[in-house]
Length: 100
Image (spheres, rainbow, N blue to C red):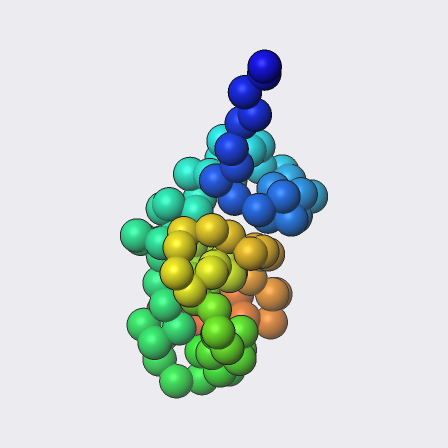
């Protein structure tokens, strides 16, 4: 009997990050771990439009900003729900206060 590979991230996360950032499965798995450890939470940014935007995404989820991506994760694990690049309108504020 063939052994099935277990996924560390959701299929949706693999598909979206491949589509939006050109990442492989291995890179997406690594992103989940690193974003959880090194990513910045909305509270680490000063009050402003960018922080308000991030906090609006936090309802029942964890949001981390890591390497130019907004990573939305499950509350209880390092599983990525989805991720997307920081919107252009917030790039200036991100670069001023929190580029990693």
